[in-house]
Image (tube, rainbow, N blue to C red; front, side, top):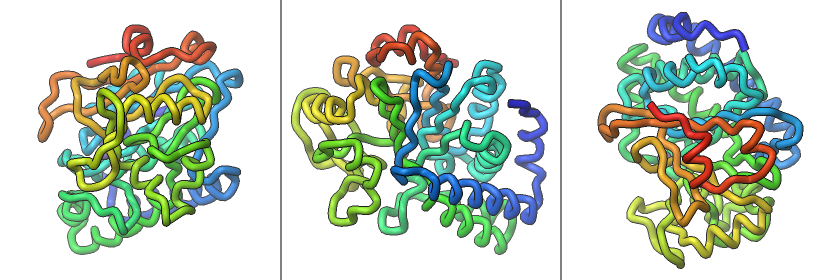
Length: 301
Ligand SMILES: [Mn+2]
């Protein structure tokens, strides 16, 4: 992929409202087409035999420096797939600019780039608080910034919310739905409004030990190792790769069943390290647990 990272970074700050709106429209069209052509609408399947590398990036939350850091890695840009685990805006002051770069990447690379839905890109009935993105659009583009924000919101409806690397890994923003019994419960989560599957995918967190509990977040659940083991077996993979929780770049949870990635630094979390994951041939050939991935495939900065 030919990407002028420095140029994009500059453009992210200089782009006019019209250029921004045009980019959002373009990417919305791409996402719409992709969604219509996916058999399982919320799920992107990757066959590990067909590709050589997958990059996985956790929460960016408005930290454009971290995003640019990741994109400057040649291996990242030459990877067969780049999966973002969601939460592009809010928290960080450069949320609008992060959107510019991420959307540009999607516009140029098409299905090579997978933008997953995080809880900060959730449906209208699952609002996140605080939500800085509308005011950051307003700050950047004045009152008319509301139009750009509204278009971004429409675009979220087309984002998939899980990736299945068949037989190896499942990737999503928050957590595994506690009642999921097959990959269909994840793939069609938004089509069963009576279940809380989508809410759990976007909002849940793993806990050590067994069981399932209410979450302090007010949405989603806390899910124990027994839940993880059952759902991972049901979808036929070894490890869950997710983000959603601030940490020092990565965290191995539930004795290696879960890997948490966090790919941004700075306020308001002030973590010293951030990280992303490079699944290369070894990690795609056989499924590794989170401990192994942490040792061989995680790149920290
Ligand atoms: Mn989140």
